[in-house]
Length: 116
Image (cartoon, rainbow, N blue to C red; front, side, top):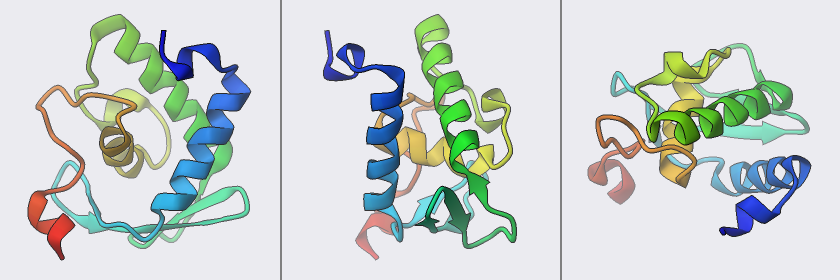
């Protein structure tokens, strides 16, 4: 049993939000290969490629869906499966932090992007 399995949903969400705060400013790649970064302000995630923010509630909804899909199928085939606003940005973040395993084996960023 992993530590995440022993935590309540609220505890998992709090840990996820703290991890997202820690990773803000890192470079990620969308499924289409577009670079992006994000910043967390209060209960919103601001992606540098979007004018609208992704709310904390939306992030948690996408997280819940990702966990559900991983239990059911063992992978998530793409951002659309998350079914939320901002999924194209949340998907590579979730892949990078290990919430989901991409069906195509993607990591959310390329090695070259990590080296920049």
